Amino acid sequence: MAPIIRTEHLRKVYAVGKERVVALNDVDLSIEKGEFCCIVGQSGSGKSTLLNQLAGLEKPTRGKVFIGRHEISAMSETDLARFRQAHLGFIFQSYNLLPTMTAAENVALPLMFKGVDKNTRLALARKELKSMGLLGRANHLPTEMSGGQQQRVGIARAFVSSPKVIFADEPTGNLDSTTSKQVLYRMLELSKNQQVTFVMVTHEPELARCADRIVTILDGKVQSSVVQDEETRRRNREELFAGLDLTIGGKAAKEKGQGGGKTEAGRVS
Image 1 (spheres, helix red, strand yellow):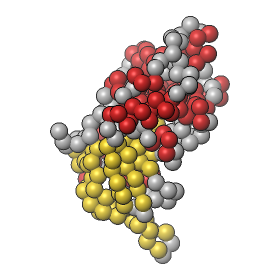
Image 2: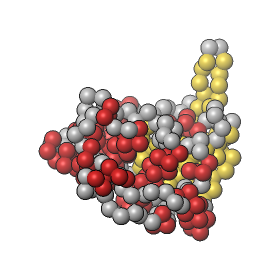
Image 3: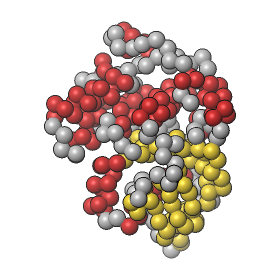
Image 4: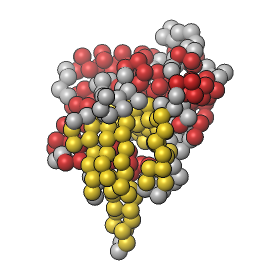
């Protein structure tokens, strides 16, 4: 099976004053369809630059980036914008929710750009919020929600348009350790259930150990791209999620009558 994401001799150089900084240097990488891939590395290693290249948010200095059969590194900005709207989803560390919009309106935003009518997009947004245990927060503004709730709204927004690939840049960076694990669990579960390819940058090794593929970046080069076997992945996930309340939405959802019983960590394989 052909990989869904592929790079060829990818290189990115930034001009900083009179100096040239090589952020990526001859990167060849393949990610298979449906994989949950984590990119790890020290600060300044090039991991966020790589994510931006894979997502078409920046142009490479040299080399090629493919998503499916599309060479996105050769697309115009207009074509890239259309391609991202049609096929990609994004989750940001800082949530990037519009403060004047409700949770449902924020989630529905990608569908508005696709021309989906208001009633349909809000109905789909509420469905995604329900899957995240946040239906009771659908009419709340971001300022009326916790950081973990806002990030789950961001995840719902990424999934609402059924993208083929979702990119996440340090999505748990602003969350406490317990909420980070709950957010990762929801991403793993949704990725598995909807067969979405996930590419996540993280600085947290314990979260990365739950991925299907771990890509390690050092000084702008891929040091390793390791696919974990099913048993290792299962063991790492069970260890991370052991004793964690994985009830969808937690107590708030139960109080609103939207939550269910606990979900077993081993279900996400």
